[in-house]
Length: 412
View 1 (cartoon, rainbow, N blue to C red):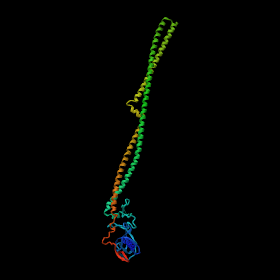
View 2 (spheres, rainbow, N blue to C red):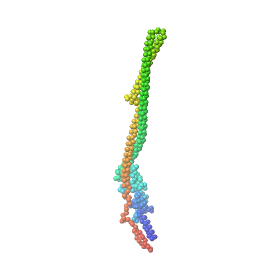
View 3 (cartoon, rainbow, N blue to C red):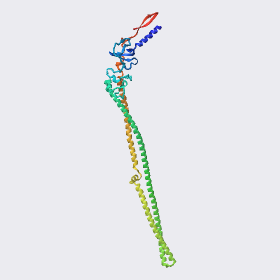
View 4 (cartoon, helix red, strand yellow):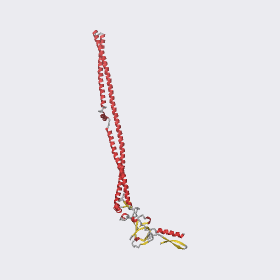
């Protein structure tokens, strides 16, 4: 059993060792790999541990022997200088590309092609920039669709940027609209307060004029009363004068001037005459006072009615109390508020439309370019061909008598 275990272990190690190709170089180095192509002067292979990686090339001048996974061996009889191993870039089948211009060192990306929006050509090969001419060579018939999609994505990005800028501009207009609304509200309140104050002042003026008229009319009534009293006093004075005059005439005929009766009658007559004169003077003054009072009352009434008449009311209100600049400022603020509203709405609407349109356009274009690029990330010529079943080597075993037992022996 111990011998059988050793045989099986040796079989496993041999099977694992021969499951890969080996390149034996003239300097003694062995490269575990999968050989892809053997030409007259070079050998193409992929490293065994990175079969999805780049394709390497080794000059035959540097190789001593090739060991294949089926156990076959090939000794290279090639004379020439020993060179260095170099990387051969993966190339799309049937598409000639200047490998030196594209990459001259170990690849820095696992992808053959990568889409890069910021590149002029839109492509990276092995993570390095390539020109539009090189990209045209790589993509071939897909170049037209690729460039259209590449430009379309850039346009989409530009639309997104423009839409964002418009939305940002809408924000600025919004701030201006808010300020304009506040300014309009303030000036509208100032205008309304001014109109209310002007109306109050106008009403106060009308009330003052009416009060003046009432005072003048009271004076007129008082003057009329004084005149009436003066008329009454004059009538009484006339009656007293007539009585005194009659009595004096009687006494004058009956008594001489030296008598006491004559002198008393004369005094009464003169007193009655004086009272009559005073009554006449008072009546004249009362009439003049009434005339003045009537003039004053008439003037006050005319001033009141003229100021508050239908024809003069608006003119007096606008002339003395109303300031049109308040309304003008309010209207200007209202117009500016409207002027900021429309750009704000326009910026938001157009910005949102451009953003949505740009995002859709950019996403579609990005999907398109990636579909094109991904078709070139698998090179059919670099996929290791499957070894046909009839030519592939499989280990064969046989039983052999060894000493006192049997051993399982691999056939070569």
